[in-house]
Length: 77
Image (cartoon, rainbow, N blue to C red; front, side, top):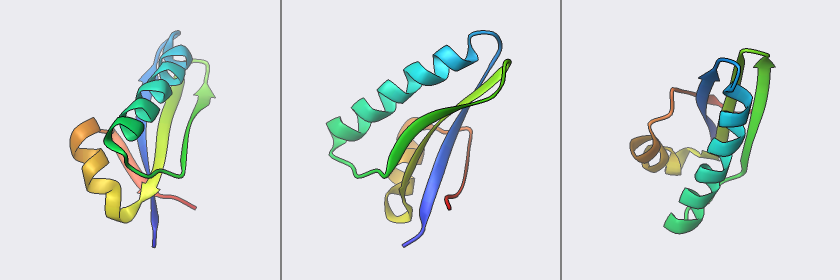
């Protein structure tokens, strides 16, 4: 089964801190809804842009997408 990476972008000087905090909420949501996931993490693209992401099975993608409204998604490696 394919894995999908759902991504949220955060820009500005506080982007990295916001992305880290968003990861906490992603994990809380997955646990509260008893949904599976493979990874929750953040990346710093540059000092003005960071992302938070969750990697889920394609079968669960619509549940996450509809509830959490990610900015974008891609097939995970």
